[in-house]
Image (cartoon, helix red, strand yellow):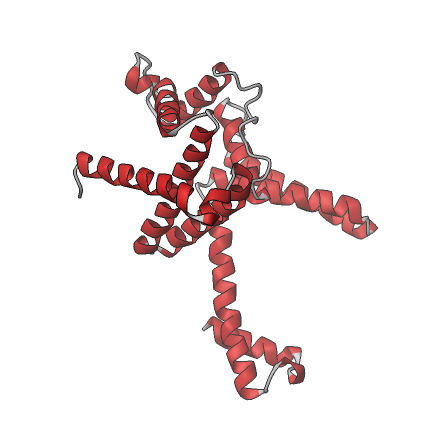
Length: 256
């Protein structure tokens, strides 16, 4: 791999390029924090796709896009005398040192769990008003539920026994059934949300990443449905002339 000096030179080159683009490129001149934010989210999702697919070449490209965005934000911040790339790097370095007293201080830890517990307590000392304050509001609901549960667990608010967690899942399912029988749409939605939250909690206790698990199921369905679609188009000339029984047969073929 490259030396530290080569790596620093490459980052410096990117800084120089962004300086030039900001002056000479009509599109780059117009960008603001606000105009870039949704593009940054999109780049992050593209990176997640590359990681999920195990495509390291694509990961390199998407990480480059994200790094460019960070440098771009730093450039805009510098223009407004708010912050620059040094301030950004110093901020995260200071945070990492403060939150790792077991490395840079005299705190002793014996497990990953103790590291996470200390992490959440240190965040409160930094001025966070709540353990859950750091969970972004805009996170997708499934990931947000997982992070909420992780953070609560970090300060000891958690189930001790995984069987109790599963019992909670079953309890929520029964409560949902009660509202289904009443055809109470509002409470059905609420209880269904509780089922999902409990299932995510159970997955966490079993060491399962629920986002990854659901993504795999999505991919599996897409793959199988694409095969069904091929059979439908080949043998029935489209979905209009296909019965549910035939679709079920095609689905079973796709599963094989």
